[in-house]
Image (cartoon, rainbow, N blue to C red; front, side, top):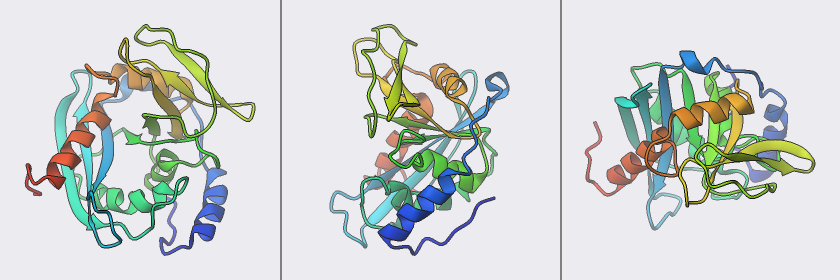
Amino acid sequence: MIQHAWNLTPQEAVQLQKKLAEKVRVEPLDVENVRLVAGCDISFSAHASAEAPVFAGIVVLERPQLTLKERVGVRTVASFPYIPGLLSFRESPPLLEAWARLSTHPDVLIADGQGLAHPRRFGIACHLGLLLNMPSIGVAKSLLVGHHEAVPNDVGAWQPVVDRGEVVGAALRLKQNVAPIYVSVGHRVDLMSAIRLVLQCRGLTRLPEPTRQAHLYVNALRRGEIPLD
């Protein structure tokens, strides 16, 4: 399992991303045997200073019905500054703190963010997948790098996201008449497996249920609507 220090300068974080990107494994995932899927997200205070509270949460759903198996959250502080392209250094420590509280053992993690669809091919889904040594997928609401052709207005339709001549992800439609989402490999999964699993985790919105429920959970924690256990 990969471990590293977190008290890094932005320049050191960039160099670490380049080094760790070489360790990402792209390989098929046996999607049909995936039972527990975790979604993770984080919610910052509206006045996000260095000492502002951060709420990180993990929601675990059981397939195929996508029923809630477990959810855990923490209130903590993010020590790394907000720097585009280095968000995993800001968000991963709180998410790992929440992950340590899980009593279940998810088969796959879906992160609210990028995987290989990142300037250095090392978004938060890659970072968490390596640190946890588990299959991980990035699902983002917007493009960070690359381009794609128009996605047909059919559920399940997708187009490859291409950056510098390389396919780094997929623009995937989970709901008609709304914008697609952006799926990319995190670790120990390939793009087709990632697309297939995300499709099987769709609900009624444009987002897969694991990350949608994680998003709702952490925002409810931040607003004080749900107490931390």
